[in-house]
Figure (tube, rainbow, N blue to C red):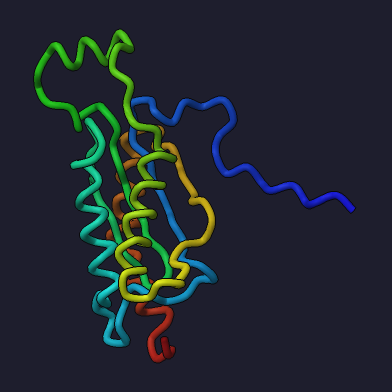
Length: 169
């Protein structure tokens, strides 16, 4: 019997190293609630995730974290590659425009992030699996899409708390 085909999560033919904004959602393995304490504050693992998110721009040229939310069992990241993540140096903009600068691919950025979090957590729990395989992405198409995504990320923790009040972790 042939193996089932996995659904492709990336947009076929799209260059994910192109300048632009991307909305990323990363799930924990088996949707384990790892990143919040029972009082809805970040857990120790949640602080590791936050540290690694904030560190992303230090490892990738012209990548900026515009917004993020760490949820109990997933993470949302709004990230910009190129665009306003670049410095104001006209030469960099000109090189980027003429495709002489190659930006990091979204998969590489998220892969390094997930590996960093896993490595830090495995120092405490050596055999612990943190992440679900892969991640979900949405390419931000316009300013309205950007604003809606920003608002979704901002409101997601409060919406989650309201829906799950009283549930045990």
